[in-house]
Each structure stands twice: as C-alpha cells, then as structure tokens.
Image (cartoon, rainbow over all chains, first blue to last red; front, side):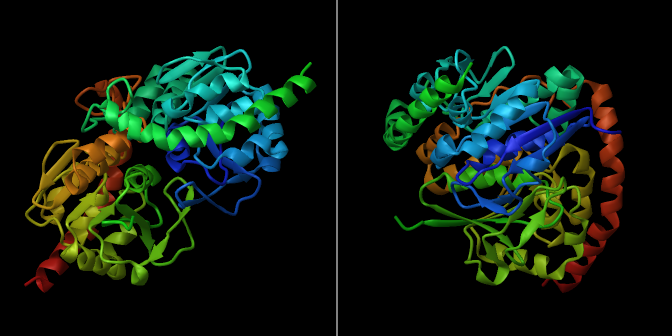
Length: 232
Length: 232
C-alpha cells in the first residue's frame, strides 16, 4: 500500500533525542504514514546528550508533509536564527495539515512565526518563553489550536503523535499503534509535572532550566520582530 | 561530578529504536549515571524501520557496566546466533548489578543463556517464546527476578529504566528524571495491551507478530541447547 500521509520530523544538532524518537516510533509504526527525518543533510547529527542520529531526507528532497513535527532540545538556540531552517518550516507549514511540536520545539515553531496568536504548550521549564514568540501558553499534555498541535515536555511527544494518528486515520489506527508499541504506561512515581512532583525537586530542576530559558529569550524576541516585519 | 554508575544499551541492526532511545533518555538525564550505546563499531546502524543511530562505544572499549540493557527488535534474529554479541552480554552480565531488557530484548538475553530459570516478560506478541530460552513468562509492565529486570513492549522501556534509576540512586533521583522528561503520560486511548484493546485489533496485530515469532523459535531453541552444553 502506498502511504496516504507524509510525516516529517525535524532533526537538528542539540535536539533532545526522545522528543524526536518517540513520535517517530508512533508515525513509522502506523500503516498509511510514510515517515521522514529531515535535516540539511543526512550525516550523523548529535543530540543534546551526544547520541547521534542521521536524517533520512535533506530539506531539498523532502516531499510536502502532511504533518511536520519539531522536537525540542536544550541546545536548540542556533535554530532560532537559522534562516534555512525557519524558511523550511514556513514553507512546509503552509501546505501541511498539522504543524506540531514536542517540548521546546514550540519555541522553534515560534521563531519561524508559526505560533503567533495560537494557544500552545511546551516543557514546563520553558513555558514563560511562549509569549516571547506571540503564542498563548496553555497548560496541557497536548494542546490543539486550529491545525497547531503542541505537546508538553519530552515524553508528551508520544501522546501528541498518537493524537495526530487519530486525526489523520481514525481512532482504530491510533488504538492499533498503541497496542503495537504496548503503550499502557505505568510510571513508577507520580512526579512527571510540577503539579504532582515534590516542590523541592521542581525548585532544583528549575534552577537548571531557568538560565537556559533566559539565554534563549533575546533571539526569540528578535525572531518575532523580524517575522512581524516581513509578515503580510 | 564523576559518574557513580555506568549504564550501557546494546545497539544492533534491526532493533526497534524506541526500545533503546526511551531508556537512553532516562539514564542520560540522570546525574550520577554515565550512559553508553554499545555495538561492534561506531558506524551508523539501521533500526528495523530504517532510522540510523550510532554507538558511542564499541564492545572492546566498553567499561564494565552496572546496568546492561538489551532492546528488542523485529529484525533481531541474527543476534540469536552472533557469538560476539552473546559473549559480550555474558561477560558484562557477570559483573553487572542489573541485567535488563526491553520488549523482545529478553529473547536476546535468553539466547545468551542469561534468563534460564528466571521470571521475565517481553512484548505481548512474543511471550510464547520465553520458555524456549528457559525463562518463565510473567505478565507485567516491568518484571524483576533477582537482578534481572525485564520490560514489556517498546514503551515499557521508559518505566523499566526509571525503575533501575530508583534502584541505583533512590526514589528522589527517579522522581527528578520523571519531572525532567515530563513523564506524566496521558495515552489518548486505553489500548496499549491485549487486556484492554479491542479484540479485533489484537487479532489483526497477532497475525503480523505470530509468523515473526515462529521464525525466531528454532534459533532460540538451538541457542539454549548450545548454552546448556557449555554451562557449568
């Protein structure tokens, strides 16, 4: 069977690999979806923790995607100023059915001007940055506003991608992929979000994330200004 | 801080990439654990769906691991007869605190003779193969018997790895990594296991998995016989 839908995930140096590999596994395990991992070239790319992954397509070879997904990453800052990346995302988003992100990938979508005026989510440690790109931060594991579907931090990408599969191919397709990847999670602890984690653990992690977020703010604000100048 | 513990995940051609990349993200996000991805060499290796990942260590350079983790894969059959891989696993397992697997990775542990007489789990579609390697199939998302910790299908690797973190470094370390990767899953459907999925979807997927499992059986039985001949 030829694929009915094309899904593409942006690979880039400094991404958080599970932000990409979670949704990738969901899409690639769904009959009817052809899945691409896309970057400027197909050489190995290092994630923010060192694991290297290679893209399956470069930007020029990538077909028009039905779903474009941008993963987050702790070392994503160069993407906020990378004209080739931002232009690729804008071009794909114009023809995509769904424009999606995982974790801080929403900040890259925002830098491309693709979340201006949209409700969206991101990793809890970076949520204060969404207004810097014109987005309206909205709590939620998966947040949808028109054709923008954004996921929370890292592991939320699996839930986000299953949501996309249900939208594209229906509930039975989504249920089948959950069964195939045995997605009946059983977290050992209730600690996956500041709403439920011990406050002192949230405080400790915040002291790690807050300076990273502060360092990203100027480029995101500049990207938004630049986009507003060229937007119609 | 120098790492207190060494975790290593076996990379191999034909693995299911999320079986590796889920636990990798858990281990690498935990201060106090140094995480390695290990294969015969550090060239890109293709998963069972084509995504290529590179190891960070080859077998010879890999330090003694505190946790060895073997991911599953639909195209794993050559591993059941690969003396270099099975010998690496046996050597590491002899000195490891925890010998672990995700999904059908338990079959590779079994081929190495490392689950003989142990309770263990695997992907639901392959559970009938565990007795072929001398293991006692035990239902569960994460099953522990002495120092063997085996996870169910694909996404169970995240739960399995968090369980290991709690064992190695305590509950707060495990809670912190869950918070960092925002692991408060919200599956869109209750369909991640035959216990809860619509029976017709389980039947359809079984018709895909059953021939794959049947094809693996002879080599697993041969591996067990070979191991029993050399075992003390």
